[in-house]
Length: 444
Image (cartoon, rainbow, N blue to C red; front, side, top):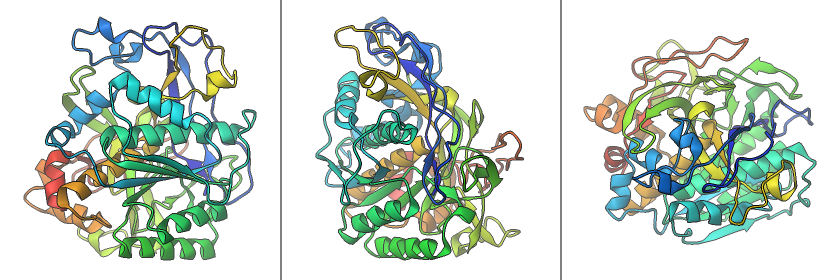
């Protein structure tokens, strides 16, 4: 599988310290062996951070928030109507979120501590990093190692931000290769390691070995039988994916998101107040170096739950739902690898910790995993595969209260025409984005 679907754009220093002194460039599609998860992240540019004390409400902590260019947990929880659920005492307690990653992540625990400290959050109920087959030593000169470490920190922090009471388990594969990624996913499923599994990666379907796809689908069927919910990001290049060499793009849906047992997460541009988080509107994400992933599978037929929504295409469509992913209004996450390994020059200021703005559909995948964890606690049972329920809700009288139908914008990406958002399900933003406090009672 080929593209780790996170995008990284804006660097910001911690709590009033000086800005990072040099931009960090992480981009392109480095050539690797076929059938491997190939990370692709964007460009980091400099922004002076601002102390929280400068904001009378204490809701904005960084310069990019004052410039209307990034969100923290307070704003995202408000925009997607998550805060009322947390205020009611539902935090994901008793639930476990499993995050499938690759390679070592040397700063993930310290990054989480810095993230929690910055926003006054408690640590997760428990936090484990497991490498059932071992991982190579972290190599800061290896672009794949660096990119996967950023993805891991993003996933951990934002799953925790949405479901702060849930336990988090990071399962690391020894490489980004398909067989290794599937092996640790199968390991987690076999051991019933958690209630929801989030996968912030994907590849063009044509690049996956058909036998491996069959094995993966069987693993997902076993997970579904155990009541485990499967989440995957849909990609960051619109209707395209990196080709099997990582040297160019091809028109393709992304796997594992295209599996009908997986809930595929697309990307939007969220317009919300950068202090209060009050929701204004959303459009399909296209621009700023990326676009939400979407399209139709060449491997899977259209599942029955999609039939009422797309009669013209007989193939599985992605995404199912969406979430903010635009690089230009991304989410803050702590990530110390660039400073620790001197990939950029960081100021030697006491208390300094580097934060960056992340975007992409992989920012939405762990957050949807957190939403599922909240639903599990609220209902007192695992939700399992949620696709049939989501599509049923979208056809019900409660649709508008539970899901915001995103009807504007496209997922066009340079060189590739994009699908347009419209009424109902579409291959740009799926069924739309969640109003979590109204959605969860319907899901359970």
